[in-house]
Length: 221
Image (cartoon, rainbow, N blue to C red; front, side, top):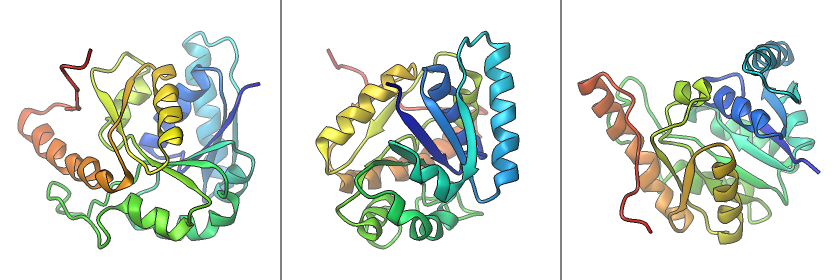
């Protein structure tokens, strides 16, 4: 039986790219948004992109964030940092017992190219503290270019996965492989401070070289 994946903030660039890849891999996807109308629009657009690409089976639905979280087996959080705390407080009760993949990066405009980690060490650590031990929080996808995810082409980058629940992290690593990427378990949730901070470094590199830099792990056999 295929799992149901909810993408909270799925109308944004990163969430939409994840929705496309998850649906293409055969999963049932629910695009979540604060607005049902915006979620529906994104779902229609996603179905059209996948159909044009030749996908045989497409199961993409739309819902407000809370309803999306309630019906999912696994939940992605892909909202901007400024919205993370409010969103999690609204849907916390619907996340208990589930794996939640938090892709939040604590960027503080306009200085997004400067590392500005929050009190507590990282956005993911703060999310775990807010949600409690009943949520299997995993931090991932902070360093993957959103439009490259949407392209559905092979990506020349890896995904670093952190979390205190190793089994949940390894499940996410396996899911990442089904999306056409390579994931690496990179230790406890406290290490998400490094992956979140790395985004600002990649932004600086992107600006210098007019590229979309990513992370590649080498030397692993």
